[in-house]
Image (tube, rainbow, N blue to C red; front, side, top):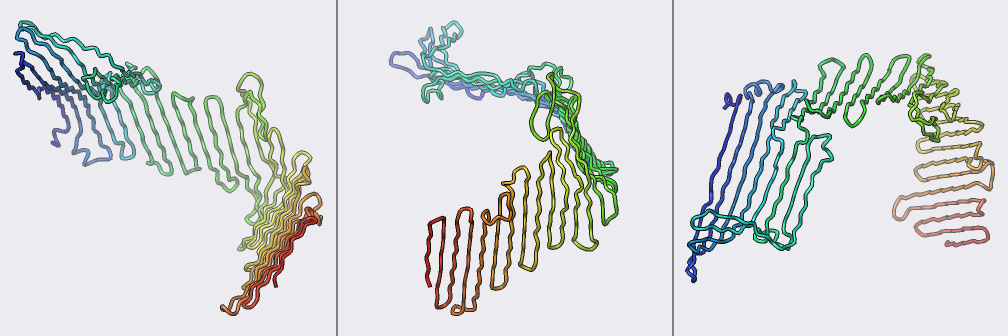
Length: 531
């Protein structure tokens, strides 16, 4: 078998009558009632194969095998019920036929264990996946003549459906067609005695020049620090271009680079290139997308100078895109003229410097922004200030300027103890002074106390006593046993702008329970007390 597998050629044909039965019943009229049943089948299998099993087992990384398989077959059943009047025989014949005829050839190559090359051939123009039909005939045979069959017409409602799916014909070169015709009257659809039925499903090759599909995928990592992947799907020798090619290449040295190229009949040739720059003088990432004559480019990073304790980073931000005829509003505007895509390119950029100061051996970092400016065709934004980060501190003092307006953000978040925190945030937008605000927050927790205070002031006057929301919470607790415990809480809230104040006090001890509620809103007041 191992030797025969190198070249196998099988052509199997078989036709046989597997059922031939008949029975005659005498009747009171002296005429014979005949029942006949016949069954036949035919099979044709063609198989050609080439596979060196010894070579495949010894070197599976470069395995190669090919085979062609063209099967076809049919099955027919027929039954006849007739009256024999000696000189003439008349009756009804019901037959059903099932047929299938397909074919394919396949060649597979393993490419050094890292890829595969597959060719799928189409040796049959029309692939009949399934073809079924049943018929009803009236039959008459004279004693000296041959049998004459006449189709029987049925006056029953029928359902006919048929059509071809050719939406993917351009891509595949194939059309899928189907047809169904049955009598539609309850369960009569299942019986051929109520009328003929037929159903078919086939695949037709519309492109005569289409002979095979070719698929190839290969991953190459033989070169140090370089890898590549190629995926190909094509119909070679076809008059219609169906080539789909995806190529991916990557490298780690001398620089990290990724290149992707796509070729498809549905799209214009497209390439994508990404590059990582990591040197002592520059750290950046760039990307470029090229499609037809349009090119998009993006780069972000920084130029580096200075010593290790105080380094200067000059930001890099570049974005180029092709102009279009349409205008759009936004920060990154697009200006165009009537007439479609223009060759000129607009850009987005960033300038200025960021200084990073460090204290060796500590977590201290200070980022100083000096005129860091974002430039777009529609707007220019400049940011100045500092960001300080330490072991128990995060502090910002930033000011953004755009046109004649400014936006100031000051914040300080600090850890003062194991469970003691403070935070303060101040926002000052010059264009909308009513949206200015200041937030102060304090939190402290000890083994027997939790204290929380929050004050929010909003509006143009951040020293205002009216636009001030104040919330204070205090909770003290002690629990030694079921007879020795003490829980007390004091909660207050006030918002003078709405003339609202509220307080809630409460406490629980082994021999006492108390609470005091006082809520005031404008001229309304609710009070309740238990002591």
